[in-house]
Length: 260
Image 1 (cartoon, rainbow, N blue to C red):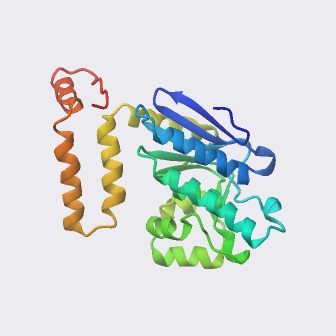
Image 2 (spheres, rainbow, N blue to C red):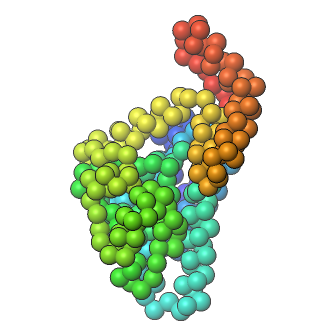
Image 3 (cartoon, rainbow, N blue to C red):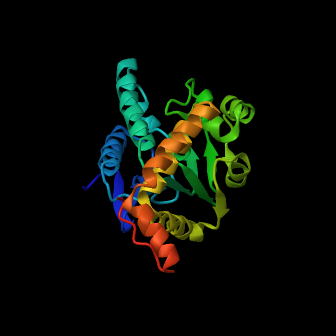
């Protein structure tokens, strides 16, 4: 589909790219962008051929947070209605059944930082800046930021970052566990694409199963989490892809996985 505030493209078979596309305002999150992101995530989540998604920004920045010019003077009712849309948008992102990788450059502030945290993992360009400035605006992160940040960095660091509202660098983001690596800006997209291509080459049902087990298992006690792992494992070894993977290994060839 054609969108006004985002671009959706295919970098390789099964590898989708969602790009924020309001570069003149640092890709600020507007109501229209929220609606278009909700639509794009809903569309992608129904694709059986989907292997991986990359989230990135056009222009000089990843995403600088909510469009405060649009919000200026909003009534409480209008603010609440907009935020319900944003809540549906972030839940649609979190519901994506395949790995989602953020490629972050420039600013990832507020909602942009939260959407980074809502990805399964992320890489940052040198010079990227992160932050959750909401405490300085009289609000709180409302797209899962408090919980996703805590899961990424631990409660002590999360409380520090949330209550000081201070920005942090790409290098700090790596140290804290918010991103998986920091690379030169010119290498960022190539790095993320190479990881996405590697994921796309693996057995699709295994990849989806691994994501499901990690995310659902972290909220269970160990015994139940292991039961969940075995539930997925017991399904996978009956699949055609498991037979193909073992046969390809023994025949010293590249496996041709079909997601069956």
